Image 1 (spheres, rainbow, N blue to C red):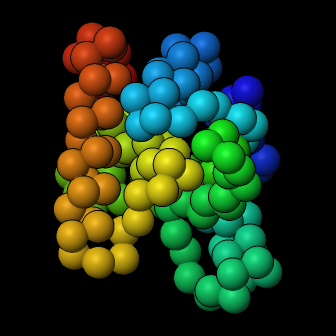
Image 2: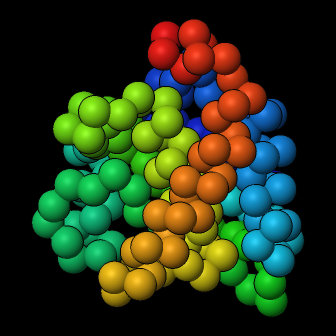
Length: 148
C-alpha cells in the first residue's frame, strides 16, 4: 500500500493521489517487484534537515531521504521529500516544479528498487530511469495543467 502524507507543509493540489499510486505500482511491477508499504511524506527543508542530522549524521539540506525496508522482492520504505528543496532545485535547473517533484518521487522509488546513484555509471542509469518514468507519467496531464 502506498500512502501520501505531509508533515509541516500542505500536499500540492496537483498531486493526484490515486493516479500517482497506480503509476508507482506499475513502475515497481515493471522493475520486477511487488509493492509493500510505501509512505511518501512531503515536508519542509527544516524538517528534512533535522531528519538528515538525527538519522544520517548529515548537516545539509536535501530534496529526498529514502528509508529502505524492502524484503523478499517486496518494495517498502519511507520517502521524505522537502517541497522547499524541490522548488529551489526546479528554479535553479529551470524545470517545472511538478516535473521536478515527480522526478524526485520516482528517484526515491527507484532507490527502493535497488538503483544507486554513487558512481557515474549508476547516476546515468538513475537519470535514464527517472526520465523514462517521467515521460510515461507526465503526458497524462495536459501542458496547461502542468504549468499551473
